[in-house]
Image (cartoon, rainbow, N blue to C red; front, side, top):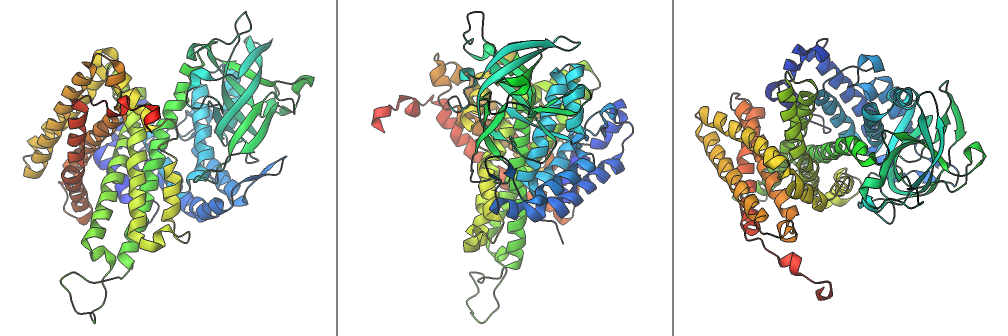
Length: 609
Protein backbone atom coordinates (compact mmCIF):
# COMPACT_ATOMS: atom_id res chain seq x y z
CA UNK A 1 0.00 0.00 0.00
CA UNK A 2 1.35 3.42 -0.96
CA UNK A 3 2.21 5.68 1.94
CA UNK A 4 -0.04 8.68 2.45
CA UNK A 5 2.78 10.61 4.15
CA UNK A 6 5.00 11.14 1.10
CA UNK A 7 5.56 9.48 -2.27
CA UNK A 8 8.96 7.78 -1.99
CA UNK A 9 9.16 7.29 -5.74
CA UNK A 10 8.90 11.05 -6.19
CA UNK A 11 11.58 11.70 -3.53
CA UNK A 12 13.95 9.31 -5.29
CA UNK A 13 13.13 10.83 -8.68
CA UNK A 14 13.99 14.32 -7.46
CA UNK A 15 17.14 13.30 -5.59
CA UNK A 16 18.70 10.84 -8.00
CA UNK A 17 17.19 11.29 -11.45
CA UNK A 18 16.94 15.07 -11.49
CA UNK A 19 19.27 16.66 -8.91
CA UNK A 20 21.97 13.98 -9.30
CA UNK A 21 22.70 13.87 -5.59
CA UNK A 22 25.04 10.92 -6.13
CA UNK A 23 27.51 13.30 -7.81
CA UNK A 24 28.04 15.00 -4.45
CA UNK A 25 29.87 11.90 -3.24
CA UNK A 26 32.79 12.94 -5.46
CA UNK A 27 33.36 15.88 -3.13
CA UNK A 28 35.61 15.45 -0.11
CA UNK A 29 32.94 16.25 2.46
CA UNK A 30 30.63 13.50 1.22
CA UNK A 31 33.23 10.98 0.04
CA UNK A 32 32.18 8.41 2.66
CA UNK A 33 28.65 8.39 1.28
CA UNK A 34 26.87 6.71 -1.60
CA UNK A 35 23.35 6.40 -2.91
CA UNK A 36 22.97 3.46 -0.54
CA UNK A 37 23.86 5.48 2.56
CA UNK A 38 21.62 8.37 1.47
CA UNK A 39 18.70 6.01 0.88
CA UNK A 40 19.31 4.19 4.17
CA UNK A 41 19.04 7.50 6.05
CA UNK A 42 15.79 8.34 4.24
CA UNK A 43 14.50 4.80 4.92
CA UNK A 44 15.13 5.24 8.65
CA UNK A 45 13.42 8.63 8.63
CA UNK A 46 10.41 7.21 6.81
CA UNK A 47 10.15 4.36 9.32
CA UNK A 48 10.35 6.56 12.44
CA UNK A 49 7.99 9.12 10.91
CA UNK A 50 5.50 6.39 10.05
CA UNK A 51 5.72 4.51 13.35
CA UNK A 52 6.13 7.31 15.91
CA UNK A 53 5.28 10.72 14.42
CA UNK A 54 2.20 10.13 12.27
CA UNK A 55 0.19 8.04 14.80
CA UNK A 56 -0.16 10.89 17.32
CA UNK A 57 -0.67 13.72 14.83
CA UNK A 58 -4.43 13.89 15.46
CA UNK A 59 -4.06 13.15 19.17
CA UNK A 60 -1.67 16.06 19.77
CA UNK A 61 -3.99 18.30 17.76
CA UNK A 62 -6.95 17.33 19.94
CA UNK A 63 -4.95 17.45 23.19
CA UNK A 64 -2.99 20.70 23.13
CA UNK A 65 -0.18 21.36 25.59
CA UNK A 66 -1.48 23.05 28.73
CA UNK A 67 0.12 25.14 31.45
CA UNK A 68 -0.82 24.69 35.09
CA UNK A 69 1.04 27.79 36.27
CA UNK A 70 4.24 25.86 36.91
CA UNK A 71 4.80 23.35 34.10
CA UNK A 72 3.69 22.67 30.55
CA UNK A 73 2.21 19.21 30.06
CA UNK A 74 1.56 17.37 26.81
CA UNK A 75 0.80 13.86 25.60
CA UNK A 76 3.73 11.45 26.18
CA UNK A 77 3.90 10.33 22.54
CA UNK A 78 5.57 13.63 21.63
CA UNK A 79 8.64 12.93 23.77
CA UNK A 80 8.77 9.29 22.65
CA UNK A 81 8.92 10.39 19.01
CA UNK A 82 11.50 13.11 19.67
CA UNK A 83 13.71 10.75 21.66
CA UNK A 84 13.70 8.34 18.71
CA UNK A 85 14.54 11.17 16.31
CA UNK A 86 17.53 12.19 18.45
CA UNK A 87 18.68 8.61 19.08
CA UNK A 88 18.81 8.03 15.31
CA UNK A 89 21.23 10.98 15.02
CA UNK A 90 18.96 13.14 12.90
CA UNK A 91 19.49 16.29 14.99
CA UNK A 92 23.08 16.33 13.69
CA UNK A 93 22.50 14.62 10.33
CA UNK A 94 24.12 17.38 8.29
CA UNK A 95 26.86 18.28 10.79
CA UNK A 96 30.57 17.46 10.76
CA UNK A 97 31.83 14.21 12.16
CA UNK A 98 33.52 16.37 14.83
CA UNK A 99 30.04 17.13 16.15
CA UNK A 100 28.93 13.50 15.97
CA UNK A 101 27.15 14.27 12.72
CA UNK A 102 26.59 12.19 9.59
CA UNK A 103 27.87 14.83 7.13
CA UNK A 104 24.86 14.27 4.90
CA UNK A 105 24.28 16.76 2.08
CA UNK A 106 21.71 19.40 2.93
CA UNK A 107 19.43 18.22 0.13
CA UNK A 108 19.30 14.72 1.66
CA UNK A 109 18.80 16.24 5.10
CA UNK A 110 15.78 18.15 3.74
CA UNK A 111 14.34 14.97 2.24
CA UNK A 112 14.63 13.44 5.71
CA UNK A 113 13.00 16.51 7.24
CA UNK A 114 10.16 16.20 4.74
CA UNK A 115 9.08 12.87 6.20
CA UNK A 116 8.92 14.08 9.79
CA UNK A 117 7.16 17.32 8.90
CA UNK A 118 4.59 15.60 6.69
CA UNK A 119 3.94 13.00 9.38
CA UNK A 120 3.55 15.47 12.24
CA UNK A 121 4.38 19.13 11.70
CA UNK A 122 3.77 20.06 15.34
CA UNK A 123 6.13 17.51 16.87
CA UNK A 124 8.80 18.01 14.23
CA UNK A 125 8.84 21.76 14.97
CA UNK A 126 10.80 21.16 18.18
CA UNK A 127 13.61 19.48 16.29
CA UNK A 128 13.90 21.85 13.38
CA UNK A 129 13.94 24.94 15.56
CA UNK A 130 16.75 23.32 17.52
CA UNK A 131 18.69 22.51 14.36
CA UNK A 132 18.30 26.08 13.13
CA UNK A 133 19.43 27.45 16.49
CA UNK A 134 22.51 25.21 16.47
CA UNK A 135 23.41 26.09 12.88
CA UNK A 136 23.18 29.80 13.69
CA UNK A 137 25.49 29.46 16.68
CA UNK A 138 27.98 27.36 14.72
CA UNK A 139 28.35 30.32 12.35
CA UNK A 140 28.42 33.10 14.96
CA UNK A 141 29.27 31.84 18.47
CA UNK A 142 32.58 31.51 20.29
CA UNK A 143 34.14 28.05 20.79
CA UNK A 144 33.16 28.23 24.46
CA UNK A 145 29.53 28.98 23.56
CA UNK A 146 29.54 26.12 21.06
CA UNK A 147 30.71 23.68 23.73
CA UNK A 148 28.18 24.84 26.31
CA UNK A 149 25.12 25.32 24.10
CA UNK A 150 25.52 23.78 20.64
CA UNK A 151 26.90 20.32 21.33
CA UNK A 152 24.09 19.53 23.80
CA UNK A 153 21.53 20.59 21.16
CA UNK A 154 23.08 18.39 18.48
CA UNK A 155 23.04 15.51 20.95
CA UNK A 156 19.34 16.11 21.65
CA UNK A 157 19.86 17.01 25.32
CA UNK A 158 18.95 20.69 24.85
CA UNK A 159 16.35 22.10 22.48
CA UNK A 160 16.39 25.59 20.96
CA UNK A 161 14.19 28.49 19.87
CA UNK A 162 14.41 31.89 18.26
CA UNK A 163 12.86 34.87 20.03
CA UNK A 164 12.29 37.81 17.68
CA UNK A 165 8.78 39.23 17.81
CA UNK A 166 7.27 41.25 20.63
CA UNK A 167 3.60 41.97 21.36
CA UNK A 168 3.84 45.62 20.31
CA UNK A 169 6.22 45.12 17.36
CA UNK A 170 5.18 41.98 15.47
CA UNK A 171 7.22 41.70 12.29
CA UNK A 172 8.61 45.21 12.71
CA UNK A 173 11.82 44.18 14.46
CA UNK A 174 13.17 47.73 14.44
CA UNK A 175 10.56 48.48 17.12
CA UNK A 176 11.54 45.83 19.65
CA UNK A 177 12.17 47.13 23.18
CA UNK A 178 13.74 44.19 25.04
CA UNK A 179 16.78 45.62 26.85
CA UNK A 180 20.15 44.02 27.54
CA UNK A 181 22.22 45.68 30.26
CA UNK A 182 25.88 44.71 30.66
CA UNK A 183 26.22 42.53 33.75
CA UNK A 184 29.76 41.11 33.67
CA UNK A 185 32.67 40.13 31.48
CA UNK A 186 32.93 36.45 32.14
CA UNK A 187 35.14 33.63 30.92
CA UNK A 188 38.52 33.15 29.23
CA UNK A 189 37.31 34.59 25.93
CA UNK A 190 36.08 37.80 27.51
CA UNK A 191 32.49 36.68 26.98
CA UNK A 192 30.05 39.44 27.84
CA UNK A 193 27.18 38.61 30.14
CA UNK A 194 24.03 40.74 30.11
CA UNK A 195 20.75 40.98 31.99
CA UNK A 196 17.70 41.02 29.70
CA UNK A 197 14.28 42.47 30.41
CA UNK A 198 11.33 42.42 28.04
CA UNK A 199 8.64 40.26 26.45
CA UNK A 200 8.74 37.97 23.43
CA UNK A 201 5.62 36.79 21.60
CA UNK A 202 4.84 33.85 19.29
CA UNK A 203 7.77 31.78 20.55
CA UNK A 204 7.32 28.27 19.23
CA UNK A 205 8.73 25.58 21.53
CA UNK A 206 9.38 28.30 24.09
CA UNK A 207 8.51 26.21 27.16
CA UNK A 208 8.21 22.45 27.68
CA UNK A 209 9.70 19.49 29.55
CA UNK A 210 10.91 17.61 26.46
CA UNK A 211 14.62 18.28 27.00
CA UNK A 212 17.00 19.09 29.84
CA UNK A 213 17.28 22.71 28.80
CA UNK A 214 15.99 25.24 26.26
CA UNK A 215 18.45 27.57 24.52
CA UNK A 216 16.71 30.77 23.46
CA UNK A 217 18.29 32.98 20.81
CA UNK A 218 16.97 36.42 21.71
CA UNK A 219 17.07 39.72 19.88
CA UNK A 220 17.46 42.68 22.25
CA UNK A 221 18.91 46.17 22.29
CA UNK A 222 21.91 47.33 24.31
CA UNK A 223 21.28 50.89 25.56
CA UNK A 224 23.68 53.64 24.58
CA UNK A 225 25.72 55.79 26.98
CA UNK A 226 22.63 57.93 27.62
CA UNK A 227 20.66 54.88 28.71
CA UNK A 228 18.36 55.05 25.68
CA UNK A 229 17.85 52.29 23.15
CA UNK A 230 19.22 52.89 19.68
CA UNK A 231 16.25 53.20 17.31
CA UNK A 232 15.92 50.95 14.28
CA UNK A 233 17.50 47.63 13.43
CA UNK A 234 21.06 48.93 13.90
CA UNK A 235 20.65 48.76 17.67
CA UNK A 236 19.74 45.06 17.75
CA UNK A 237 22.09 42.48 19.28
CA UNK A 238 21.79 38.69 19.61
CA UNK A 239 21.98 36.79 22.88
CA UNK A 240 22.01 33.20 24.12
CA UNK A 241 19.53 33.05 27.00
CA UNK A 242 19.17 29.51 28.41
CA UNK A 243 16.24 28.33 30.52
CA UNK A 244 18.80 26.93 32.96
CA UNK A 245 22.27 28.37 33.31
CA UNK A 246 25.06 25.99 32.32
CA UNK A 247 28.06 25.45 34.58
CA UNK A 248 31.63 25.13 33.28
CA UNK A 249 31.47 21.33 33.60
CA UNK A 250 28.31 21.25 31.48
CA UNK A 251 25.93 20.55 34.35
CA UNK A 252 22.79 22.62 34.78
CA UNK A 253 22.79 25.49 37.23
CA UNK A 254 20.14 27.94 38.39
CA UNK A 255 16.83 28.56 36.66
CA UNK A 256 17.18 31.69 34.55
CA UNK A 257 14.75 34.61 34.87
CA UNK A 258 12.47 33.50 32.03
CA UNK A 259 8.79 33.01 32.81
CA UNK A 260 5.98 31.67 30.68
CA UNK A 261 3.22 34.28 30.68
CA UNK A 262 0.84 32.11 28.70
CA UNK A 263 0.32 29.80 25.75
CA UNK A 264 -1.12 31.02 22.47
CA UNK A 265 -3.84 28.81 20.98
CA UNK A 266 -3.57 28.63 17.21
CA UNK A 267 -5.83 27.08 14.60
CA UNK A 268 -3.06 24.66 13.58
CA UNK A 269 0.22 23.23 14.82
CA UNK A 270 -1.60 22.75 18.10
CA UNK A 271 0.91 20.24 19.42
CA UNK A 272 3.70 22.83 19.43
CA UNK A 273 3.80 25.08 22.47
CA UNK A 274 3.58 28.69 21.33
CA UNK A 275 4.44 31.14 24.06
CA UNK A 276 4.50 34.62 25.44
CA UNK A 277 7.74 34.75 27.44
CA UNK A 278 8.71 37.34 30.02
CA UNK A 279 12.42 37.94 30.41
CA UNK A 280 13.56 39.50 33.69
CA UNK A 281 10.22 39.80 35.48
CA UNK A 282 11.84 38.55 38.71
CA UNK A 283 10.01 35.26 39.15
CA UNK A 284 13.39 33.56 39.13
CA UNK A 285 16.51 35.40 40.34
CA UNK A 286 19.77 33.91 39.10
CA UNK A 287 22.62 35.19 41.22
CA UNK A 288 20.09 36.63 43.65
CA UNK A 289 18.64 39.35 41.45
CA UNK A 290 16.16 39.86 38.64
CA UNK A 291 17.07 39.91 34.98
CA UNK A 292 17.50 37.02 32.54
CA UNK A 293 21.19 36.24 32.04
CA UNK A 294 22.19 36.26 28.40
CA UNK A 295 25.47 35.92 26.54
CA UNK A 296 26.25 38.20 23.61
CA UNK A 297 26.65 36.36 20.31
CA UNK A 298 29.07 38.04 17.93
CA UNK A 299 29.50 41.79 17.94
CA UNK A 300 27.14 44.25 19.60
CA UNK A 301 24.50 45.75 17.29
CA UNK A 302 25.01 43.00 14.67
CA UNK A 303 22.24 40.81 15.99
CA UNK A 304 19.87 40.93 13.06
CA UNK A 305 22.60 39.96 10.59
CA UNK A 306 23.55 37.04 12.82
CA UNK A 307 19.95 35.96 13.31
CA UNK A 308 19.39 35.97 9.55
CA UNK A 309 21.28 32.67 9.42
CA UNK A 310 18.42 31.11 11.34
CA UNK A 311 15.69 33.20 9.74
CA UNK A 312 16.63 32.24 6.18
CA UNK A 313 16.93 28.59 7.16
CA UNK A 314 13.54 28.88 8.84
CA UNK A 315 12.03 30.40 5.69
CA UNK A 316 13.12 27.45 3.59
CA UNK A 317 11.82 25.25 6.40
CA UNK A 318 8.42 26.92 6.29
CA UNK A 319 8.31 26.39 2.54
CA UNK A 320 9.19 22.73 3.06
CA UNK A 321 6.52 22.36 5.74
CA UNK A 322 3.88 23.99 3.56
CA UNK A 323 4.87 21.78 0.65
CA UNK A 324 4.74 18.44 2.43
CA UNK A 325 1.48 19.26 4.18
CA UNK A 326 0.15 19.81 0.68
CA UNK A 327 1.70 16.54 -0.49
CA UNK A 328 0.26 14.44 2.32
CA UNK A 329 -3.14 16.08 1.86
CA UNK A 330 -3.00 15.23 -1.85
CA UNK A 331 -2.05 11.60 -1.13
CA UNK A 332 -4.92 11.28 1.34
CA UNK A 333 -7.33 12.75 -1.22
CA UNK A 334 -5.98 10.45 -3.93
CA UNK A 335 -6.46 7.39 -1.73
CA UNK A 336 -9.98 8.50 -0.84
CA UNK A 337 -10.90 9.18 -4.47
CA UNK A 338 -9.74 5.73 -5.53
CA UNK A 339 -11.79 4.01 -2.85
CA UNK A 340 -14.97 6.09 -2.58
CA UNK A 341 -17.75 4.92 -4.94
CA UNK A 342 -20.26 7.60 -5.81
CA UNK A 343 -22.28 8.43 -8.92
CA UNK A 344 -21.82 7.35 -12.53
CA UNK A 345 -20.37 8.81 -15.69
CA UNK A 346 -22.52 11.54 -17.32
CA UNK A 347 -23.22 9.28 -20.30
CA UNK A 348 -24.39 6.42 -18.09
CA UNK A 349 -28.13 6.81 -17.43
CA UNK A 350 -28.90 3.40 -15.95
CA UNK A 351 -29.25 3.72 -12.12
CA UNK A 352 -29.00 -0.06 -11.82
CA UNK A 353 -25.37 0.04 -12.93
CA UNK A 354 -22.80 0.12 -10.10
CA UNK A 355 -21.40 3.42 -8.93
CA UNK A 356 -17.87 4.34 -9.96
CA UNK A 357 -15.01 5.49 -7.76
CA UNK A 358 -15.05 9.28 -7.66
CA UNK A 359 -11.63 9.43 -9.32
CA UNK A 360 -13.54 8.50 -12.50
CA UNK A 361 -15.23 11.92 -12.43
CA UNK A 362 -13.44 14.55 -14.47
CA UNK A 363 -13.83 17.35 -11.95
CA UNK A 364 -12.28 15.20 -9.21
CA UNK A 365 -9.37 14.47 -11.52
CA UNK A 366 -9.03 18.20 -12.11
CA UNK A 367 -8.73 18.82 -8.39
CA UNK A 368 -6.27 15.97 -7.90
CA UNK A 369 -4.20 17.13 -10.87
CA UNK A 370 -4.08 20.66 -9.50
CA UNK A 371 -2.87 19.30 -6.15
CA UNK A 372 -0.22 17.21 -7.86
CA UNK A 373 0.97 20.17 -9.93
CA UNK A 374 1.15 22.51 -6.93
CA UNK A 375 2.76 20.13 -4.48
CA UNK A 376 5.23 18.29 -6.69
CA UNK A 377 6.27 21.57 -8.29
CA UNK A 378 6.82 23.09 -4.86
CA UNK A 379 8.77 20.06 -3.60
CA UNK A 380 11.04 20.33 -6.62
CA UNK A 381 11.72 23.98 -5.79
CA UNK A 382 12.48 23.26 -2.12
CA UNK A 383 14.91 20.45 -2.92
CA UNK A 384 16.48 22.53 -5.69
CA UNK A 385 17.12 25.27 -3.12
CA UNK A 386 18.58 22.69 -0.75
CA UNK A 387 20.87 21.50 -3.55
CA UNK A 388 21.97 25.13 -3.98
CA UNK A 389 22.96 25.18 -0.30
CA UNK A 390 25.23 22.18 -0.94
CA UNK A 391 26.69 23.96 -3.95
CA UNK A 392 27.20 27.11 -1.90
CA UNK A 393 29.06 25.12 0.78
CA UNK A 394 31.03 22.63 -1.31
CA UNK A 395 30.99 23.88 -4.90
CA UNK A 396 34.04 23.03 -6.95
CA UNK A 397 35.05 26.66 -7.44
CA UNK A 398 34.54 29.95 -5.60
CA UNK A 399 32.59 31.18 -8.60
CA UNK A 400 30.19 28.22 -8.41
CA UNK A 401 29.68 28.78 -4.71
CA UNK A 402 29.01 32.49 -5.20
CA UNK A 403 26.54 31.84 -8.00
CA UNK A 404 24.67 29.27 -5.93
CA UNK A 405 24.38 31.83 -3.16
CA UNK A 406 22.96 34.40 -5.57
CA UNK A 407 20.35 31.98 -6.89
CA UNK A 408 19.39 30.97 -3.37
CA UNK A 409 19.02 34.58 -2.19
CA UNK A 410 16.66 35.36 -5.05
CA UNK A 411 14.61 32.18 -4.67
CA UNK A 412 14.24 32.20 -0.87
CA UNK A 413 11.18 34.52 -0.67
CA UNK A 414 9.53 32.44 -3.42
CA UNK A 415 10.43 29.13 -1.76
CA UNK A 416 8.81 30.36 1.45
CA UNK A 417 5.73 32.08 0.05
CA UNK A 418 4.64 30.18 -3.07
CA UNK A 419 4.18 26.80 -1.33
CA UNK A 420 2.54 28.55 1.61
CA UNK A 421 -0.13 29.91 -0.72
CA UNK A 422 -0.59 27.17 -3.28
CA UNK A 423 -0.01 24.06 -1.19
CA UNK A 424 -2.54 25.43 1.26
CA UNK A 425 -4.84 25.70 -1.75
CA UNK A 426 -4.00 22.05 -2.44
CA UNK A 427 -5.17 21.23 1.07
CA UNK A 428 -8.42 23.09 0.39
CA UNK A 429 -8.91 20.99 -2.74
CA UNK A 430 -8.19 17.83 -0.73
CA UNK A 431 -11.11 18.74 1.53
CA UNK A 432 -13.26 19.32 -1.56
CA UNK A 433 -12.39 15.89 -2.95
CA UNK A 434 -13.59 14.34 0.31
CA UNK A 435 -16.86 16.26 0.09
CA UNK A 436 -18.75 16.54 3.37
CA UNK A 437 -16.38 14.12 5.05
CA UNK A 438 -13.49 16.48 4.30
CA UNK A 439 -14.40 19.07 6.89
CA UNK A 440 -15.10 16.58 9.67
CA UNK A 441 -12.47 15.81 12.26
CA UNK A 442 -12.67 12.08 11.57
CA UNK A 443 -10.64 12.68 8.42
CA UNK A 444 -7.11 14.07 8.34
CA UNK A 445 -7.43 16.61 5.56
CA UNK A 446 -9.18 19.29 7.62
CA UNK A 447 -6.25 19.31 10.05
CA UNK A 448 -3.72 19.52 7.24
CA UNK A 449 -5.51 22.65 6.01
CA UNK A 450 -5.54 24.22 9.48
CA UNK A 451 -1.89 23.39 10.02
CA UNK A 452 -0.88 24.78 6.64
CA UNK A 453 -2.88 27.98 6.94
CA UNK A 454 -0.28 29.19 9.44
CA UNK A 455 2.53 29.05 6.88
CA UNK A 456 1.52 32.11 4.82
CA UNK A 457 2.20 34.04 8.05
CA UNK A 458 5.10 32.08 9.56
CA UNK A 459 8.50 33.74 8.97
CA UNK A 460 7.00 36.70 7.15
CA UNK A 461 3.77 37.30 5.29
CA UNK A 462 3.38 37.37 1.51
CA UNK A 463 3.48 41.16 1.77
CA UNK A 464 6.86 41.12 3.51
CA UNK A 465 8.38 38.67 1.05
CA UNK A 466 6.89 40.49 -1.91
CA UNK A 467 8.63 43.66 -0.72
CA UNK A 468 11.84 41.68 -0.25
CA UNK A 469 11.70 40.20 -3.75
CA UNK A 470 10.67 43.30 -5.70
CA UNK A 471 12.13 45.94 -3.42
CA UNK A 472 15.48 44.31 -2.80
CA UNK A 473 16.34 41.01 -4.51
CA UNK A 474 15.68 42.09 -8.10
CA UNK A 475 17.67 45.30 -7.65
CA UNK A 476 20.70 44.48 -5.48
CA UNK A 477 24.11 44.10 -7.09
CA UNK A 478 22.83 45.90 -10.13
CA UNK A 479 20.24 43.21 -10.80
CA UNK A 480 22.84 40.41 -10.70
CA UNK A 481 20.61 37.97 -8.80
CA UNK A 482 17.72 38.46 -11.20
CA UNK A 483 20.10 37.99 -14.12
CA UNK A 484 21.59 34.82 -12.65
CA UNK A 485 18.19 33.19 -12.24
CA UNK A 486 17.23 34.30 -15.75
CA UNK A 487 20.34 32.63 -17.13
CA UNK A 488 19.45 29.36 -15.42
CA UNK A 489 15.90 29.54 -16.78
CA UNK A 490 17.26 30.26 -20.28
CA UNK A 491 19.60 27.26 -20.05
CA UNK A 492 16.67 25.01 -19.17
CA UNK A 493 14.66 26.42 -22.07
CA UNK A 494 17.53 25.72 -24.47
CA UNK A 495 17.89 22.13 -23.27
CA UNK A 496 14.14 21.55 -23.59
CA UNK A 497 14.21 22.75 -27.19
CA UNK A 498 17.24 20.62 -27.96
CA UNK A 499 15.30 17.50 -27.00
CA UNK A 500 13.19 18.15 -30.12
CA UNK A 501 10.01 17.25 -28.31
CA UNK A 502 7.06 19.26 -29.58
CA UNK A 503 5.35 19.40 -26.21
CA UNK A 504 8.38 20.49 -24.24
CA UNK A 505 9.38 22.92 -26.98
CA UNK A 506 6.02 24.64 -26.70
CA UNK A 507 6.37 24.86 -22.92
CA UNK A 508 9.87 26.25 -23.33
CA UNK A 509 8.57 28.98 -25.62
CA UNK A 510 5.77 29.82 -23.21
CA UNK A 511 8.19 30.13 -20.28
CA UNK A 512 10.66 32.15 -22.35
CA UNK A 513 7.99 34.66 -23.30
CA UNK A 514 6.77 34.98 -19.73
CA UNK A 515 10.25 35.43 -18.25
CA UNK A 516 11.03 38.10 -20.81
CA UNK A 517 7.78 39.80 -19.88
CA UNK A 518 8.75 39.71 -16.19
CA UNK A 519 11.96 41.56 -17.02
CA UNK A 520 10.08 44.28 -18.90
CA UNK A 521 7.43 44.66 -16.20
CA UNK A 522 10.13 44.91 -13.55
CA UNK A 523 11.78 47.72 -15.48
CA UNK A 524 8.42 49.46 -15.83
CA UNK A 525 7.77 49.24 -12.11
CA UNK A 526 11.18 50.68 -11.29
CA UNK A 527 10.59 53.40 -13.84
CA UNK A 528 7.54 54.65 -11.95
CA UNK A 529 9.69 57.21 -10.13
CA UNK A 530 7.98 56.55 -6.81
CA UNK A 531 8.83 53.51 -4.68
CA UNK A 532 5.36 53.60 -3.15
CA UNK A 533 3.98 52.95 -6.63
CA UNK A 534 6.73 50.48 -7.52
CA UNK A 535 6.01 48.33 -4.48
CA UNK A 536 2.24 48.88 -4.19
CA UNK A 537 1.48 45.48 -5.72
CA UNK A 538 4.59 43.59 -4.62
CA UNK A 539 2.59 40.57 -3.43
CA UNK A 540 1.11 40.17 -6.90
CA UNK A 541 4.63 40.38 -8.35
CA UNK A 542 5.79 37.67 -5.96
CA UNK A 543 2.97 35.40 -7.05
CA UNK A 544 3.58 35.97 -10.77
CA UNK A 545 7.32 35.35 -10.51
CA UNK A 546 6.61 32.36 -8.28
CA UNK A 547 4.39 30.83 -10.95
CA UNK A 548 7.16 31.31 -13.51
CA UNK A 549 9.69 29.65 -11.20
CA UNK A 550 7.39 26.66 -10.59
CA UNK A 551 6.87 26.37 -14.35
CA UNK A 552 10.66 26.23 -14.65
CA UNK A 553 10.72 23.44 -12.05
CA UNK A 554 8.10 21.54 -14.04
CA UNK A 555 10.01 21.96 -17.30
CA UNK A 556 13.09 20.55 -15.56
CA UNK A 557 11.14 17.56 -14.25
CA UNK A 558 9.50 16.96 -17.62
CA UNK A 559 12.86 16.78 -19.37
CA UNK A 560 13.76 13.85 -17.13
CA UNK A 561 10.32 12.25 -17.19
CA UNK A 562 10.03 12.24 -20.98
CA UNK A 563 12.78 9.58 -21.06
CA UNK A 564 10.56 7.10 -19.19
CA UNK A 565 7.42 5.26 -20.18
CA UNK A 566 5.72 4.01 -17.02
CA UNK A 567 2.77 5.58 -15.24
CA UNK A 568 4.93 7.59 -12.85
CA UNK A 569 6.65 9.45 -15.70
CA UNK A 570 3.39 9.90 -17.59
CA UNK A 571 1.91 11.44 -14.45
CA UNK A 572 4.82 13.88 -14.29
CA UNK A 573 4.31 14.92 -17.90
CA UNK A 574 0.58 15.35 -17.40
CA UNK A 575 1.11 17.50 -14.30
CA UNK A 576 3.56 19.63 -16.31
CA UNK A 577 0.95 19.95 -19.05
CA UNK A 578 -1.64 21.01 -16.48
CA UNK A 579 0.61 23.65 -14.95
CA UNK A 580 1.48 25.24 -18.29
CA UNK A 581 -2.08 25.11 -19.62
CA UNK A 582 -4.04 25.99 -16.50
CA UNK A 583 -1.74 27.83 -14.09
CA UNK A 584 0.91 29.73 -15.99
CA UNK A 585 -1.61 31.90 -17.88
CA UNK A 586 -2.58 33.38 -14.49
CA UNK A 587 0.88 34.96 -14.28
CA UNK A 588 0.42 36.65 -17.63
CA UNK A 589 -2.81 38.22 -16.42
CA UNK A 590 -1.09 39.42 -13.26
CA UNK A 591 1.73 40.96 -15.29
CA UNK A 592 -0.85 42.82 -17.38
CA UNK A 593 -2.07 44.52 -14.22
CA UNK A 594 1.42 45.13 -12.83
CA UNK A 595 2.53 46.74 -16.09
CA UNK A 596 -0.07 49.48 -15.69
CA UNK A 597 1.50 50.41 -12.31
CA UNK A 598 -2.03 50.25 -10.96
CA UNK A 599 -2.57 52.35 -7.82
CA UNK A 600 -6.05 51.18 -6.85
CA UNK A 601 -4.94 49.77 -3.50
CA UNK A 602 -2.40 52.54 -2.89
CA UNK A 603 -5.03 55.24 -3.47
CA UNK A 604 -7.59 53.64 -1.15
CA UNK A 605 -8.13 55.71 1.99
CA UNK A 606 -8.83 54.52 5.52
CA UNK A 607 -12.09 56.45 5.75
CA UNK A 608 -13.42 54.86 2.55
CA UNK A 609 -13.60 51.42 4.14
